[in-house]
Image (cartoon, rainbow, N blue to C red; front, side, top):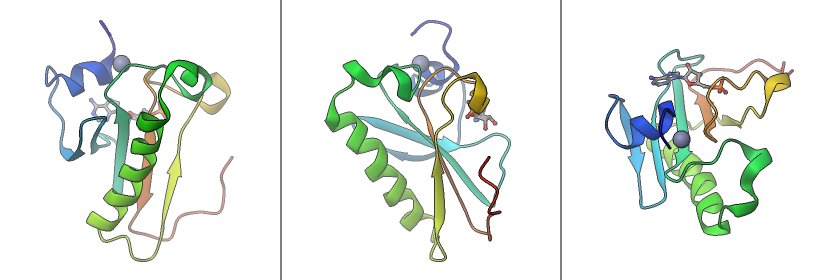
Length: 113
Ligand code: AMP
Ligand code: ZN
């Protein structure tokens, strides 16, 4: 999608530190990491958020979650990890292309909200 930051990253128009890629998913390091490992997992097809996934195939959605697990293993997050997807203004979503944060590499805080 034109003017979407993550679509531009997927297209290689904006540089990123790639961590994982398959036919449905692209994953790269967050530019402002909140943990030693902080990776963003995004579907290659544009969709704004989890509130808009009606037209997205189960294959693509499953690929996103499988990628989160694969990345956790690849990054050696043996102690555990957190997956989060901010959806809409109350959750402070800042990029309007569905993404899953994969966080780990330290003891994360219990505060989720
Ligand atoms: P959210 O606030 O949940 O929408 O998450 C958007 C995330 O994208 C934030 O954690 C930002 O640090 C991250 N971000 C913004 N621009 C870039 C970029 N060019 N490369 C990597 N991560 C980015
Ligand atoms: Zn997009």
